[in-house]
Length: 348
Image 1 (cartoon, one colour):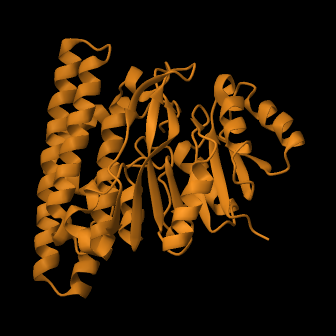
Image 2 (cartoon, rainbow, N blue to C red):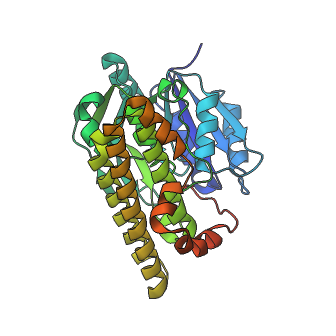
Image 3 (tube, rainbow, N blue to C red):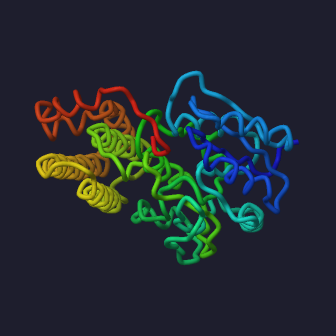
């Protein structure tokens, strides 16, 4: 018999935090769960920690990738292996409060919600609370909120409970070897949901300040992956949704993300010249994304639905719309720099 919730734990070189993470899941007040640990080719002792804890708790499962494929692929592997009606994910350097899963499941089951989102603490490596995000409690009928779809909830995959059918029935997966994989995926899942519940409770503890995080290093690959993720969303909504309803929401989403990343660039250990180059390219990405979204929405609004879907499929190649708008010459050097060996961390 399938458990009520499958918890997905993507793992890459987090042996210093992993036992704390798994203990917080094993000790949940809800016992009817299973735990899928996906080791993405860790070079430390992470897999050994899972095996040791697995001997004490049969609910823990370990799957190991043969090659490093990134956080998105680890999430896909865990979701595909799971069989529960609901899934949750916990990053392997984070931890959750004891009653998180029980409370979320009770809310989801009682009122037939497709996604439950809660607040979270940002904590340091020792678990000390640095800041807290506590959302306003509310219920959302997604069909009535399409104009603001990209502002529904946070776009992280964690601190949430998902109905597994949102993945299984749609074929939606996280992009592999890509930064910002949750940014490219969560809006698509929300668009397929009927009802969503946002809780003001805080259950999730998100560890910040790790030296290998996106906050500590910036590369050309980050910029290209932004383009890729924006294009995934643009193509999806043009093909299958009434994008003209949510184009303003999408453009605000792009602008907010670009501004956030500009702040990261400004704080990164780069020369002033490098920061200015990133800033200019980010601005070009934002302009190109806005223009293509508006053009797509206009074409979709004015054309028959079948024609709109066909046009969307023809423009589905990653980066294609951005290259046309920005110009391939301006991206050549950035593509070359981004082609260096993929360096995984918790965000990619």
